[in-house]
Image (cartoon, rainbow, N blue to C red):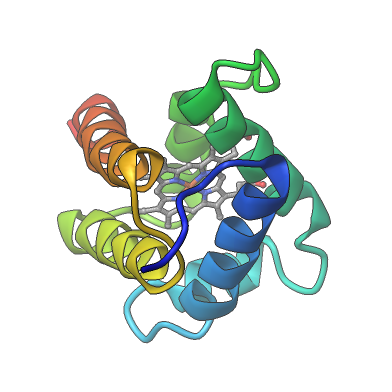
Length: 123
Ligand code: HEM
């Protein structure tokens, strides 16, 4: 039995493991390599705050992911397959590391938020 996501440290493990996989992905990795490159600290920090806030309502994230991805879409046109790949990788990273209520919630939120971002920016 794996454990559930409980602490900020768990979320840090989740986002760093996810980043270490997605940056080598053949479908989507190049976007991360080009935009984030060798300095992932800011991205990992924002992602940790985002997921901490999403799962534990800490108020630690105040950014605007829709705007961020709208900006990104102007540099790298994002397609449906990119979003599908993102969600698939995020889901498999969670399944590799965790199980439980928060792990399930994180997967559900990732899928729902992906649809929201996609709907808002791919028009
Ligand atoms: C097509 C799929 C996606 C790609 C290629 C992508 C790529 C990126 C990149 C390159 C950044 C850094 C942007 C920068 O520093 O300027 C970023 C930021 C971020 N992404 Fe994504 N992303 C995708 C989907 C998602 C999804 C589905 C979520 C949430 C469920 C998400 C959550 C975030 C968050 C929270 C940030 C930080 C936003 C901020 O406050 O600036 N991303 N993403």
